[in-house]
Length: 164
Image (cartoon, rainbow, N blue to C red; front, side, top):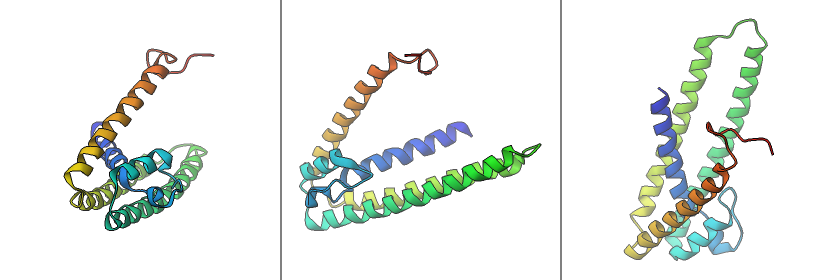
């Protein structure tokens, strides 16, 4: 089950990363739309989205932001329920597993919804926009990898941070 969960999360986060790459109104407004931030604004500007494409991206960003907030609230409720269970003499294993399954199903549904919206937006991109999107995502992945390797020097064999 752990491998399946990891695949679902990887697909979901990859999809969200792609959505975040184009899903911001900041390029048009000059504001940094959270949670996607200023780098996403630069990417959206580099894609030179049409008004219709920008409207699609704005809708995706808005929905993603709302869903992320809802999931944040649900996580808080789950943590509170888990704290209550921890105070009991024994834990209800079935309830814990149900909470995990519910969370995976919610995230999977969210990822599929965002993927469908991204696929619709992708269909409107021209060849130059798709090429730019790929190049920018590759550059971002390289920067991320470089940051991870710089920080991995600070971690132990299993990833734990050493004392500073």
